[in-house]
Length: 323
Image (cartoon, rainbow, N blue to C red; front, top):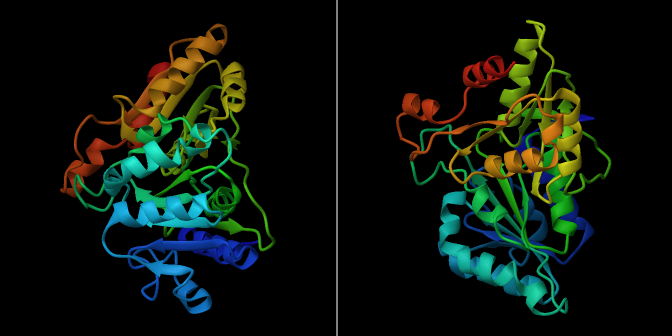
């Protein structure tokens, strides 16, 4: 095992997949000689050159459309959108074209494309650069949605996404890039659609993903000192959703809270809570709770920003109210 930063694990995944398969290439703004704004593509240009590491104009709609077209003819593009907020510019290419092509072609065509982007709050980047928009893509049949929380998962899930034959939205939280974790030196993938119990427990289940996984693990550690056993389920992928792991955990603990940074209204948490109520009602000791972002635009001010997303203290308060 080597200890790598989250961004280094992603970088290594790209190197390995581009060396393994000459049909894999990447394109986006400033990803070439500059190495990308988050250094995820650093060094790729020197090894693979401009034909496989393409710097694009500042025109998300055009180069995403190029990626969809390239995938249709058999390559495996990895398209980078600098902020998930900018995906509003590419919705037709993703929702009406990439997501639907296999179905509407009767299985004759596929779109094996990964769209890497970055989301979440935390750096005082204000309302147009701090959103969590995964629910938009979660709602669309034909898309896979991936949100890794650790360097190990980041590398393994990116490699799996590149090898997958479906269009995949791969969202990296901005506060995770500098976090560290152990990553195997040998080749491996993390299969899409498999949640992981990051910490086992008996008293209550926290269902979460992305950066909130780290906060939930911190909560579980704190409450362990007070005699509460908290199980943390990291979904890792929203589509496919690993319902079996969720339901098995709820059956064991009898209590469930869904935690995510995205706003509560219309969020993924509401769908997961409904699924638990429909399929595991008899296992519950009480209703499923959601702890989510406030229904507001993320403000620029750092102190106000903190209030808008779930904190460790807020998660602890929600757990104590339930138990």
